Amino acid sequence: MCYRKGTSKIMEMNALRMGTSPVGRLILSMSLPAIFSMLVQAMYNIIDSIFIARISEAALTGVTLIFPVNMFIIAVSVGTGVGVNSLISRRLGQKKYEEAGMVASQSYRLAFISGFVFMILGLFFSRTFVEFFSDNPEIIENAVIYCQIVTVFSIFIMIQINNDRILQAQGNMLVPMVTNLVGATVHIILAYFLVFGKWIFPEWGVAGAAIATIIGQGTGVLLGSLYIYKKNHLIRIRIRGFKMDPGVIRDIYSVGFPSILMQSLASLMLLAVNGILIGFSEAAVAVMGVYFRTQSFVFMPVFGLNQGIMPIIGYNYGAKNKDRIMKTYWLSLMMAGAFMGIGTILFQIGPHFILELFNASSEMLRIGEPALRIISIGFLPAAFSIICSVLFQGIGHGIYSLVVSLARQFIGLLPLAFALSFLWGVTGVWWAFPAAEFIGMAASGVLVYRTYVRELSSLDSESIKTRS
Image 1 (cartoon, rainbow, N blue to C red):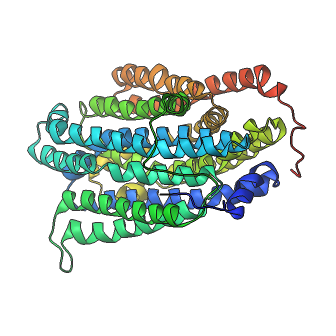
Image 2 (tube, rainbow, N blue to C red):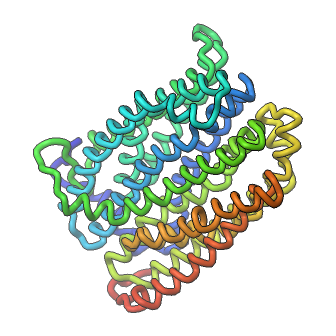
Image 3 (cartoon, rainbow, N blue to C red):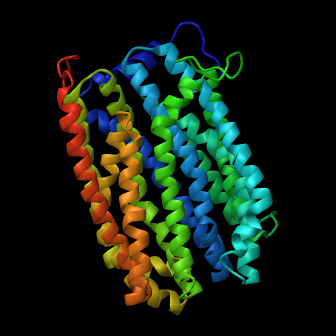
């Protein structure tokens, strides 16, 4: 991946528009490709799980037990990508193109290191992890197979997300959308053939679903890497001929590490909640699996919105433009609220239909219908917390995002789920979710006010003439 002489004027203008284009139009142009991409990813996660549920409820339960592992892999890759995106965006806002290129270059080495660590953990500790939660042989075998495949080949998702964040930091949202769309399409088609043994393919069940996931991710990596290698870019990207810079790594993880911890908390939260739920029934764990797949269709558009607004916030923070930062924040907050409002309505009126998609047993329907309605009460306060977190990350205060996540998941969700399970049984676990989101909303509001008063209000709003 190299940088060619004659930096692309188009790429430079693409970055500069983050400080000049009308904010509303800019948010849409930056976010819609990412939102579409995230919706596609949510769709293939749901379809994957529908295929697995057709194998057996035990297969769905086994993969659900591994879902926290998947979440942790994504937490490391996305968290690192958040740090890379934020730092590159701020350097571009400061017109420090060489430094932005060094950030991008070093991010690939970080991706390879992370992928190698997960490969070792997956090879040697998958069975120990699964047997901690279940003694059902069918659940164990399905979970171990799935876990080993996705961890050994986790390098693909690491590089794919890294490619996406480098391009997004430069204002290029279209190519990441295309690579994710193609990868997801390959995944869905292969999952159907490999899970059920259609056409010339063997029937591999859960292993087939995991293999399809890896091949889909590898396809996205290939397309994204070819684009980065072949096209001119605003920043110079190198794989060889430089030393790792501790200062750059520190700057990446000053924002990225809190984001990793923040998303890892979600993984640990699901791990702990699964531990509580399996004490009631395996069907309750399967319901949690259905919820986490289907709620991604509601949350993913908001996460796509985050990808679009982070470089806008980072660029304008580097350019000391308070007005554009705050306008971006308020408009994105309204958009996130709209997405979550629609999601809340769907979960309130359609839980039976959602569960039937996953071949739900009568026990799953009995537990799951009230569960989906109760949990979705927390969608709207979650929208507020998520947008506040991206504001913190965009201006380099990733620790605030971590504080919000702690408030939602450890100070809020886990203690409440544990306590309420004693009072109301499995229903109490479901009520812990919306209660924790309201706690997170309160913490987010306090920190946004603190950030604005102490830092954003003093920025020079006239540093860039805008047409916002």
